[in-house]
Length: 258
Image (cartoon, rainbow, N blue to C red; front, side, top):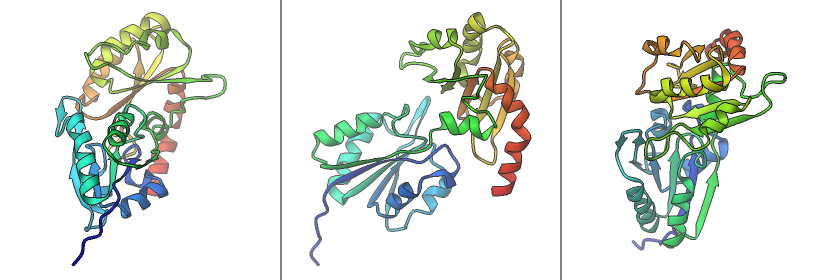
């Protein structure tokens, strides 16, 4: 039997914030048409289980402090599998262009002979996480803008814009910041005051979602409620007070659709 050569192709796909039902329709179609799927740690197992059995599925999980594969190895694997099998879907939690290193993978693929590249956006946990907890990132009269930052840089220091964000009146959403929550609260407290509300949302959009709402001045006393090893989103700003009011509505929506 003659094997038909498939054109190397890459689809960079955002899986969404956690709940497998929150992937886009276009994204789901891409998974059905893939030859290989390379997926991350934050992709829900149910999503992987529903990919056709004929599709090769390769785990390349990356979480803070624990990497199944380095970014360099992932880049190389994308190229190798695309040239060998054809259509590779690189499946990432959230959106591939929001702290997902998606552009690095695209540039590497282009430089190594992959002519067809498509990006399918995903719903970022930076917006969906707060929404799942009933917290809007903007709300008339409370916040007209929002910042999204990674809490730390590669060397472990605060992101360069952290202090600027603390000095603003905007809602601030921090990804990968749970382990540094006390230092974050101290920094923001210097500029916004100890009574400024803060929320920590973990496992957002999933059945085991947990939200801790406190103030910058007392969040340290609530850390026993937080699993520092679980994915977490930190929200700082007056909009968090809306979340306290909407918690019952969020829970009702979850019960209706799950």
